[in-house]
Length: 159
Image 1 (tube, rainbow, N blue to C red):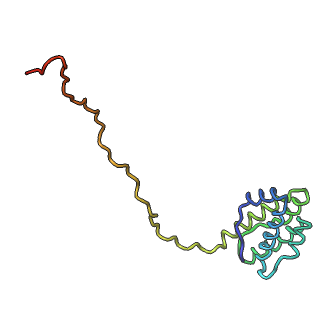
Image 2 (tube, rainbow, N blue to C red):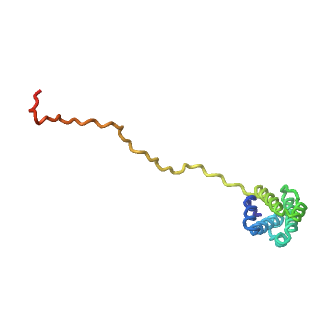
Image 3 (spheres, rainbow, N blue to C red):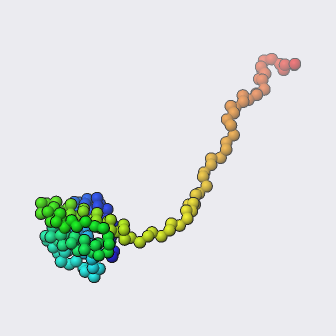
């Protein structure tokens, strides 16, 4: 029993963006997974074809098998097959998709194998931090000491 856990919001948005093409792919995957809860060798071809061409009936039949499979395996599940028929025929088929995917996600969480133990945390390599070279403190320049000019008209000065 291999059930893929899907993000419902992403699936709905993709169904809208692709004008329903992804919705068909999503329905095929969901219906096949729902039928395989009861019997893993059942490919769910009847439910898939009905799900594509007569959506409420396909979801109704898949939900019946899904519920029987859950009961046989001791997984708690509420039968919503009549609700699928009603919602589908009043034009709320997307709600069928959401409810079935939600149920499949719950089963996937229950049946999923335990995750392997996490490896001990190792510090990632950190490159040494750049340090600016140390510059000497600013000192204002000193006034140069020039020898006093002698007046060419005066003779040398004696101290």
